[in-house]
Image (cartoon, rainbow, N blue to C red; front, side, top):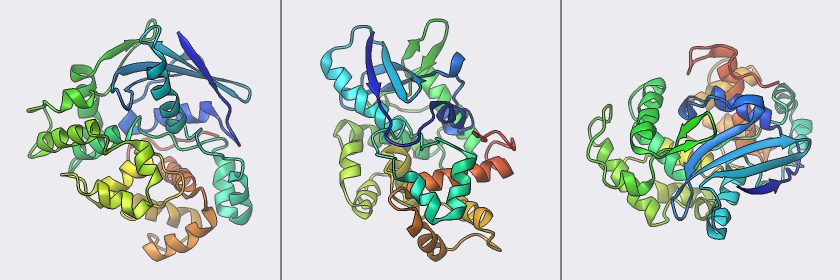
Length: 309
């Protein structure tokens, strides 16, 4: 097995990441034993399905490519930055504690969820596909459909006694005609999305290199992708570290809960408050959303599931 080591810059807890994933409905994640993260995904570029096992020892994060066995150098070069991005380890987080010093509310939520960084979708492609699958249905329904697509259309990866099914590659979705639960134009939109991924339009590095407004406008050119979907694809798919979603009602409620506002925060209030979160606005957004879900259980119906500290 090919292994590589990642050294976080700033606070990071893999255990907190795993606990977040266990309560993150789109991931439908069931943890491996002993605080190890095991996940399978199509690697950006070649779109070959890989299986990766991640563990943490002290300050060091160790990753091993379990599948395919003996991967070639080119595949390793694709996988390493993708794993770093998924876990937000490609960002220097050494300045993150200073955000809590500037903003006591942010500091309190940092202490509540120590070491938690955003855990992204495995790729912008998968994030955008999730938004299409979930269009106009309940998030729990969408999660079931996404899991079934992985089981029926994705490739299985064995981690010893545990099998994880990866979300289907763009090559597979490009030929999708229909699938149970996908109503209306969703299959058509997923085919278009798959072709865009194969043409590198959804490349995470490309999206991260663009100004946020330009990246969002580019994403909205894709069929079935609107304001909310574009924001989720950029912030949770490409895992851009310093942006605030403009079409996210749950964030408005999360800010209101944390800052004691009488009603959902307005876009202007969020813009003003979030200035103190730079250059980690996405990170604070995640912590506030995690706190909202812990307090209300509005997505999963399980209060307390998201607590990581």
